[in-house]
Length: 151
View 1: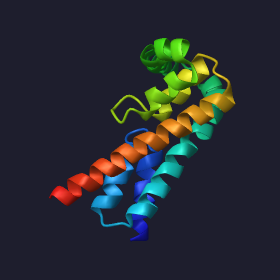
View 2 (view 1 turned 45 degrees about the vertical axis):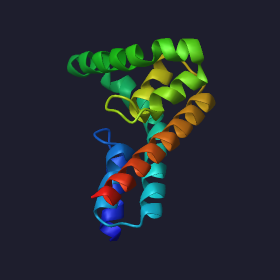
View 3 (view 1 turned 90 degrees about the vertical axis):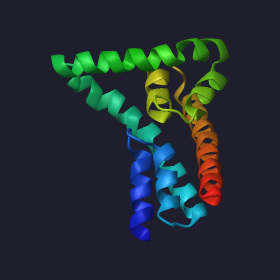
View 4 (view 1 turned 180 degrees about the vertical axis):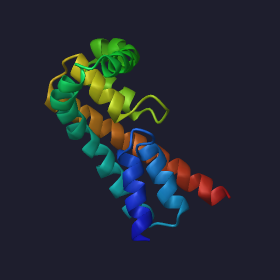
């Protein structure tokens, strides 16, 4: 039981799934639906400060390596492309909307990178990401519960 909650949290902090994977995994494994939601949401929120730390420190050092720099530039361009118009036009709400979409390629990783590149104030970026993560988590949680109930 505890193991499933931990694995759900790890999926939620992972760039491969975020809460979009952690929540359905935890619920499918029979975990308490409220604990699963809370753990996955909080783990996903934790990504923002971790990514900022990475972007401000580790990333700066790794950009000296050609292989990493090419990959990082491509990833940053993808994150910027998906959010630039929304963030420029709608600011906080555009970033929040981008993060809240429970589809691949959106979420707190891309949202944090976009906010970093577009130089969005950290406090605003944090709250836009948090609200977006919360809404996305509610959508995924509700959809998963309804799907489990249907089957």
